[in-house]
Amino acid sequence: MNHPNHCHHSDLVFVLLVVLTLLVALVVPAEAGLPEAHQQALAVYKKTKDPHQAINVLEEAGVKGVLDKKPAGMKDAAYVDLLNDYGFFLSETSDRYAEAIPILQRVISLDPKRHVAFLNLGDSYRKAMSRESDPRKTIELKRLVRHNYDSYVRLLREKGLQVALPERVRQALSEGEGQLRQEVQKGIGVQQGGIPQYELVMSKDQKVCSHFLKLFNDDLRREKAIAYDKHPEFTSIEWKRMGNVGADLDFREMEIAEFDINNDGLEDLVVKGQWSIHNELGDQLYIYQKTETAPPLRDSFGLAELKQYDGQVYKDQTYYLKAFARSGRKHRLAAPFVLYPFKFDQSFYISMKDLAHKFGAPENWHIVTRYQKPNDLQDVCYYRMTSIGP
Image (cartoon, rainbow, N blue to C red; front, side):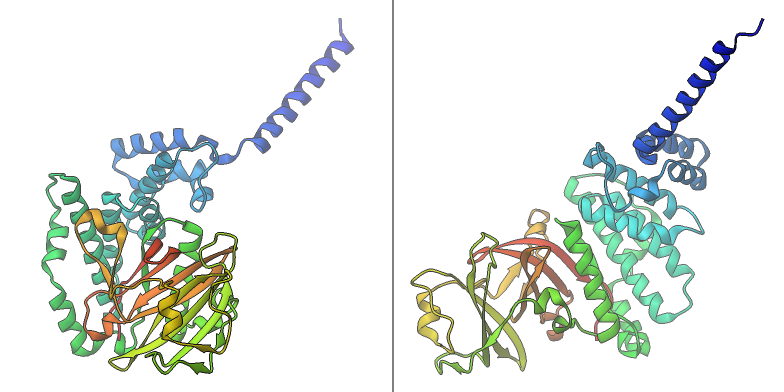
């Protein structure tokens, strides 16, 4: 005997189950199962040694959707582990190793002490180098390989880890900087058409550091220099050129502006002076809180004002990159400095680099920092020139 009401009830239950399943699919993101997929991918790789199988597990779980943003509810350490292992699997392939490079760079920006990330990144560059036919690009890739392997070894030593170095690492590090310079002198360096670029080495704000890494490198490709005057981040600050600079100052020109350079909610008076050393122009910044005793915004400014209101951003001739202090390696900038305050995402920062590479220094650094008070800068991003400059 048929029971129509019973059939209708069953159909209703089935429909409700379908709707509920769809709602769950909409509410729960695809990457919600990534922690489990991560463990599964590790197990698959351990068993098969096939990076493609491990990659498939992660990509089917939605790993590509979280490369730029950590999933809600995932801990920072777990997120870095996930990206690192995904980058490692990609670096182990013969066809997708190039995809590992930006992922491993992000891992390093999130955890600059992640020594294995430098090893994996060096391996990725090494594979790219082995397949490169352009001599100019080969030199640049060789430098990137050596830089990342060197960072890997340095971090091992800092952590006191006794690890046998792979032969490829020992071989790359045995080829010193002198050999690279000899290759450049043969006529295949940047001066013959190579393109310098920055690599992000330290990041305390991924949004800021990624944005300016792209901005700086785009300028270097197009202009061979950073075009500060073409970006609203820099031009939004309205500088007024001072026509009557005190004769007792050694500045070629001075500019003055009003903005909240220390991000405390109050506008400050900022004076920028430009001076010359060895025919190269360097900058100095003087910061004054806008109080009744602060120097006025005017066309005349002399040594008396600068001495009376001691707001110099940085007095010393050498600026050490503080994030490396514990490593014992003293990376530094040396005066003359090139200083450009700018505004990004409603906050003010200072772009800071030096001209030391023009005087034969082996390193070329560019940093983004935040001004707190005189001689107190909070570094946000470190960029290192990874190609051979002109």
